[in-house]
Image (tube, rainbow, N blue to C red; front, side, top):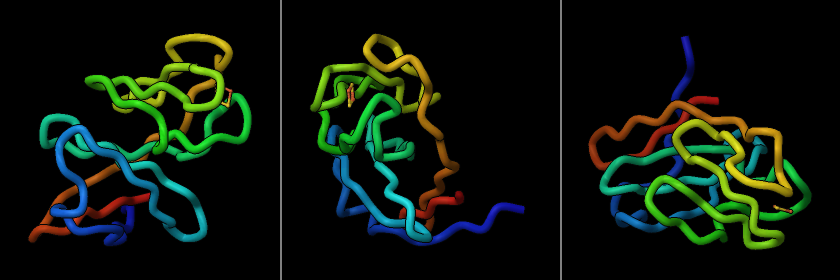
Length: 102
Ligand code: FES
């Protein structure tokens, strides 16, 4: 069974916001879409860029470096120059804490 790790307080991430957290040495991007938190690998699958620094529009984040778009629910790349998906992680929010399982 996946082990959930507390990574942030729920109050740290308002709807429409994103942030990067380190989970077991891995950079994970968190996104709050209308109160639901999603977690994907922070590093773009195209090159070195932090997806948590990208613009979030609904469930879609745009990479700040070359503009590839990813669905934060599935990690799927929606537009070039990225074609490979990024990993997604299970998230749960309990007692005001955001927890992620790798
Ligand atoms: S680094 Fe993200 S699209 Fe190039």
